[in-house]
Length: 384
Image (tube, rainbow, N blue to C red; front, side, top):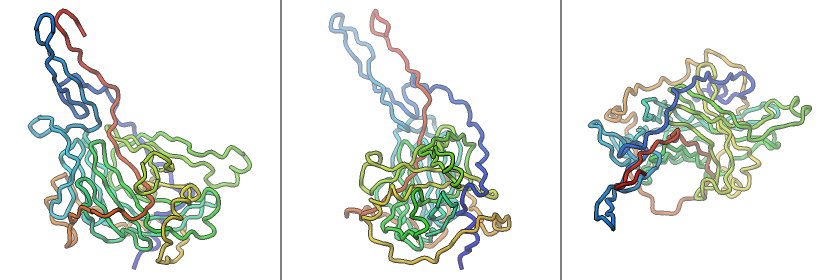
């Protein structure tokens, strides 16, 4: 039987008791050095040029720049990043890049996503579920919990967990790129919205729990602001805010919501995310206003399953922490050598059919570079 108390605890209305996660400044960045032949974000391509007058040759060329272009081997050699997963003992492993990723074969496993950043930090977490939130009243309601399922490698760099939730047809998809890692929650059905969550400003939320995070620096951006003082006083959470999360060499920027198959930026809907600490648990809430998403959601078939309405008690209980599943031990990227926790591992299935309609809510953890320093080259008799 599911622990409704635990689910209620996790889906709490944020202003009710959730204090902001303690923030620490990541190490001070230095300008990126692109003066070497190769590095994590650049590669020099030489092109010898002959002076037409003297016949002398000198070294020319160009510098290719891209986030996560190369990775350093154990022998110190820079090699091009490979945007691909390998299946190792049932896990999906991406290890040929500046950041490394392990995906468990079951998204419900604690720490199912394990990301090692270029500067040695780890982000380890898992999706918890989906909820509704009314910022006017502060009411929250759980509508789906992640369930046991097995992932499929649908393209060289994408793993998808189909029917990943218990009461709605929705998938979880991960994409490994040279620039970072992306998580997509893909709705294939339109959730049924109760009348008390149909007011303007009501939100649908994705909840992800992080078992391990490096020091994070937050920058808050207001996406919507209620300027009327009287209205503000009557609303539990009057503003829609998004937090930019900086982990050092990688960061989590603005999330987007959009129709599956559509460009991520063109016509997309902003996602408001907030990282909070609730009774010792670090939860990322990603919120999309239902009214903004309604047009795309109504293109999907109505949800077939019916969930028991679970109004959420916003009174914290420290005893609930004992019900959280223990975190698995994953000390290094080499953990993929262990056996998968359930019998069936991630399968390789490069889909050929057109994807079914869907609505996507995403986050991306991407490499971030602070400035660049280049090297000058000389031609005969002239400094460049």
